[in-house]
Structure formats: C-alpha cells, structure tokens
Length: 198
Length: 198
Image (cartoon, chains in turn brown, green):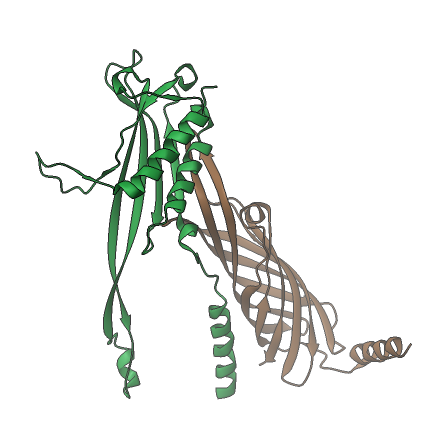
C-alpha cells in the first residue's frame, strides 16, 4: 500500500510539476544499447551493450527541435567452431564477428506536450550509417564497410530536472538500406542520458 | 566547462575499454580448409598409399639436396591419424603407390612474421609522446600449415591429378601440441564426407 502511494505521489509530481512551456535546444550525451534485426540479427544474434550517442538540437518552434545525431554501437559475437561450405570448398574454425554501426543523421523532434516537466516526443532522422563488418577466422579477416542511406524513427521523452538539465530516454529503430556489400541492416536501440540545454 | 569535458572524455574512455576482445587460446585460431574435385568418383575407389614421412616445405631446397622431414616422433602419430581416418571411410592401405587408386601426400611448412611496436615512456617530457617518439620493440609469431592432398592417377587421368586438398593452419605455440594437429586432421576428414567409399 505504501509502495502504491509512493508511486502515485511520484507520478503526480512528475506530471503536475510546472515547467517551461517550450523546449529549449540542447546537447545530449547518452548510453545506447542495440538489438539487431533481420540480416544483422542473423549475423550476430547477441544484443549490443556497447554504444553511445551525441545529439545536438536547436529549437525552431516551441515544440519542434531540429539538429544532428552521431551514434555508435558495436555488435560482437564469438561463434564456436563450425564448418562453412561454399560449393566444393569447406572452411571450419572459430569465428569472431564484429559489426560497428555509426549513424550520422539530421533529426527532428516534435514534442506532444511542453507544459509539464515530462515531455514526450516523436522524432525522425535521415542521413547515413557507416557499417563495418569484420569476420575473423584463424589469421584472416573478411571485411565489409559500406556507407548506407539511413532513417531513424524515434519515440522518447525528456524529463526536466533543472533549468539547464533534462534526463532523456528514447527508443529508436535505425535502418541502413541495402548496399552493394551488405543487405538491409537494422537495429532497435534504447538510449538514456542527459540533455544540457543551451 | 572543464568538468563537462572530463565527464565526456570519461564516457569515451569507458566505451573504448569495452571494445570486444578477440581470441584467447591458440586453438581459437585453428582453421581447416578442404576442397575436392566433384568430377572424381571417390565412392568407386578403395585403395590408397601414403609415405612414411612428412616432408617440410622450406622453399630453400637446392637441386640435388634431400628435403627436410618432420621429426619421426611427431610425424608418426600424424600419419597414424591420417591412416585411421582413411580406413574409417572405407579405404584400404596398400604399400605400392602404383597399385593404389589415390596417394595421400602430407606436407608441412611454417611461416614467421616479424612485426614492430613502439613502447612509450615519456620520462618527464609528456609532449614527446605526441611526436611518435619511443622505444621500438620487435616481436614475431609463427604459423604452421599441414597440407594433405589426395592424388589420383588411374584410368580417369592422363596425368596424376589432385582430387582432394586439405590445409590445417594455426598459430604455433612454443611447445608442439600433437593433439591440436590430430584434431585438425580429424576435422579435415569430418568435413569431407564425399571421401566415404562405404
């Protein structure tokens, strides 16, 4: 009962706290996770817990921000000894698979509410994603490193902690479109960090 | 501002230190490659011959000189392992290569790669480090390759022809590990089920 009461009070506090009726621009630094889908998940099934994100946003309206994102996630998996066959050739051994994904995007955020301390938003990013896939086997490395056209739909929220700082939590899906070297590469990302208002 | 820079640099360093590591053990770098002539009908054959020595390929043999051979105490178990695998696939060993359907030729070679790195110790002139100044160190690693080829010279071929090739490659440790080599020999036959004559 005490717990429910505490949660209710905290929730009311968050939603009723008065705040700026506009969202100022910011620099944000976040820790980012990655969960591969499609071809990326087939290649590396483990999620990435190594990643980060830097964002810049400038207010162009009370509830619309535009800016740029620079992110990085590295996916990694050791595949135990196995045999890979192509035509009459077979190769067996342990494989070390690494894939770096570095999205560089221009982004926009549309805030659904600006009245309270908690400000939910939807966002969209468009740009490029540099991908570097390395397959290490024995002393050899097979490397593919294309730049792909990328889009990133996003849902998130800013929680205004003080005049100059907000906490940011976001869920996004990065999609790097097919290139000559790699199929479509996509991953879900949950990121959290701080936004320092300009 | 200084505090912020230290904070961001900290994040970058933490993320960098999380970068995935590669192989930890010598056997993690072992690979086995096989290829075969898919026009050759292995199933209709049944006899093989094999020399009682394993030649070392050095690339330095002068005409008229005898080649080097692998020490008998290592070559013996390796040859036994090859014979065991051939017999398990239904082949019968014969002493006379002229009467054998195929001849199994084993050979080994090693390759040493030398590389340099620079250890930095900047004494009390930290700015020197930025100039690439330091103490060069030399190190090396040696890889070993065991090749097994099956050569056929029956009615099917005017000249003897290689119908199966297997190459096992790995990083050599200080001590000879015959179990690692034997595992690679087993693997080469395991990933070549078409050799089965049963």
